[in-house]
Length: 304
Image 1 (cartoon, one colour):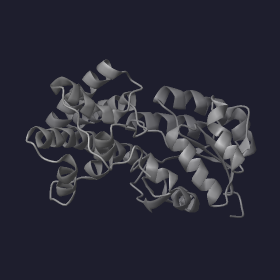
Image 2: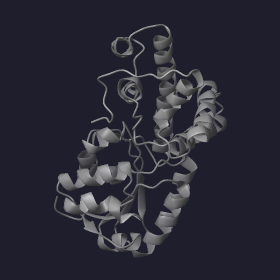
Image 3: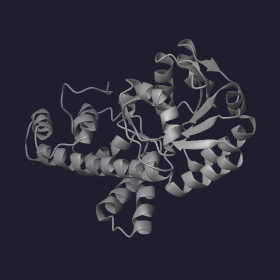
């Protein structure tokens, strides 16, 4: 871990950010962290991370900066704060889910200040991020991807270099779009099983063993059956990602009929339960509409 790649700054310690920063620490990297809510940093500080009082303080003290933030507007704001103080040769790694146009625009801002950018969306769920087993989707120049490969390996166990900047934002939105479609479909499938008089636990395992299974069914359906819905991903974020998918559909001339319907369902869910509600509660929308709970014993409240 010697050399200029050893010290990373991590800005944005939500569910995903905290998990990934923790994996860097476990792998032996030096990590300095910042979040507007210092409470989120306390477990990382206890594990050996350094605390900085601002995003600027992070950028001035580290070799490279990673950000994981809630929106393109916040990403741009933080980027403009850190660029003036970043060290020569430092790179910026953006893990937020952004649209391709956002990525390319922010890359130009960074380039004008002499800073090279990588995009690094991930997929697989926060529970895998805490285990260092999430899938990483870097986009950008290959030499820069290679430069940070050891850090990527610390945070994830499957890494796919998707191509130049902007490529990863597209595949990330595609994977999330599929996940949300699968979630709605899994809820409808379980409701058919319930209304058809089947044992829900047996139905879950039968679907899991069938050609109709999905990663979402195998993971998030368990949280529905438990009743916790605790996937650590909000309705607001789901609606944001589905909005990106719809924009890509229009731009690339692809009619996204199923994704469009799914977006409408999620907007109803956000209206019903609020933007901070768990995205998995989209199944609750169907449960409440039919007055039928989808519960079964033996399923976890959180994924590990």
